[in-house]
Length: 224
Ligand SMILES: [Zn+2]
Image 1 (cartoon, rainbow, N blue to C red):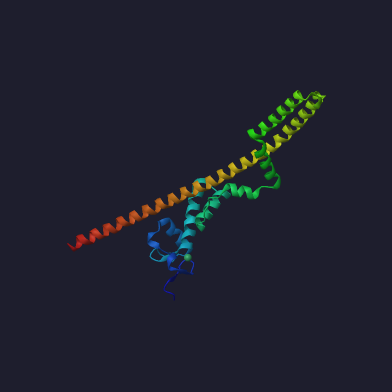
Image 2: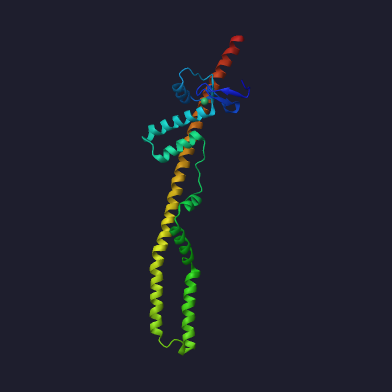
């Protein structure tokens, strides 16, 4: 047998020594879950990291279900993340960028192009320049009313197109906020569950320390 490995009594698999955890350091809730998987297992025996994470996930799932009833898919993802020790934080901008269609990308690009003061200033400058040129060179535009009507029609059409484009861009923003809120909720829930588990573990270790100190004190008193 390889000295740098051990056999996990729960799953029966050969695991590296770095994955070995002491059973006596585990809270009673986890001991109960591990004993449900293998009734002959005792806290004196070791357990591998994978079995421990599985038991921890089961325990936190039961705790959450007891408080909230059946778990939503979002909450199940949090428990899966705890079991697999995977990260939940995601870059919402990158995730959203991957899911955008060509039309949505174009809407965002056009929206960024027109929704600023530079675009408005350019339109005003063009109109102002055109008026000044016509005042200085009268023959240039002998029918200003007609040309103004054409320009008004063009600008009105532009405004009619801008509305839906800006709304499409706002919908993308709403989608990003929704994605961010979902990710924040999952991270907060995971942090809360982790803190609760750590508290439980510290309470267990303190209790065990008290028991050991009591035994040690009794033993010393008997010797004296
Ligand atoms: Zn195992």
